[in-house]
Amino acid sequence: MEDKVEYCANCKRHIAAINYVIHNVHCVRNIQLCERCEEPVPRSELEKHVEENHTVQACSDCGAPMEKWLIEKHKSSCSKRLTPCEFCKLDVPLDELQEHTTACGSRTEKCIICKKHVLIKDLKAHPNFCQKVEEEIYCGDCGLKVAEKYFAIHASVCKGRELYAKDEEEVYCVNCGFMVAVKFFAVHLSVCKGRELYAKDMLNKDYNCEMCGLKVPLNNVDFHMSMCQSSTSLRKSSVDIVCEYCQEEIPSKSMKNIS
Image (cartoon, rainbow, N blue to C red; front, side, top):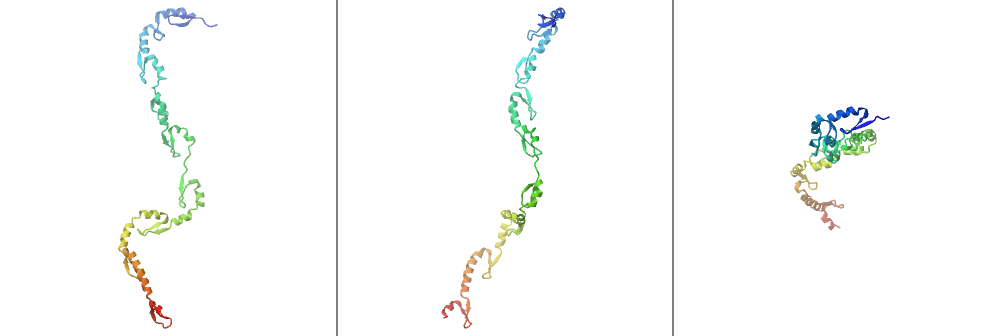
């Protein structure tokens, strides 16, 4: 059977019937209801109660005015309360947190294992998918980079060895006088510093004409050759020919007169 209760009109509370008489005497003499919150408060502490709970105070986050006793409850839902960003840990007002988090999580950091740039928001899950970048070795035969674990196989079948050997042959550069590897020769020619010096040096040298044996300045070789060829042809046309009958030398131009 449930205990009977009595309602106290002074403090507006239900009291066990067995204690009601004692309670009522004490309550009427010492307890008073606060007019603002209707909470029973000792008469001697009513002024303090009003000061601590019902004085108006502004919220430190949003500035909204309210009674002190409501501040704590308000802060749990205040749109301006400072909330730490899950990525950078900075405190951001709640109503700006979503925008901040979206931007903050879109930043990237370089993974020290796979060397890839990963979104901040994906960093926690990244270790589950991260794959270490395999070291690559440069093949001196074909010039390709090959994964370290496959290099031994590659080296045994590399098709570039013969070509590489040819590339390693050296060619003499007439511009600067150096021997240059075939594979670098085209690049070397484009940057060779000896061209201008070589050209100037060659202008001061003479060329031995194969036709006439004369020494000709290099800057006049083209003109000399055109003239020398004509002169040589003319001389050849006037060379003496030995007659097969009398054994005398006769100018070739006179041979047509002999019948």
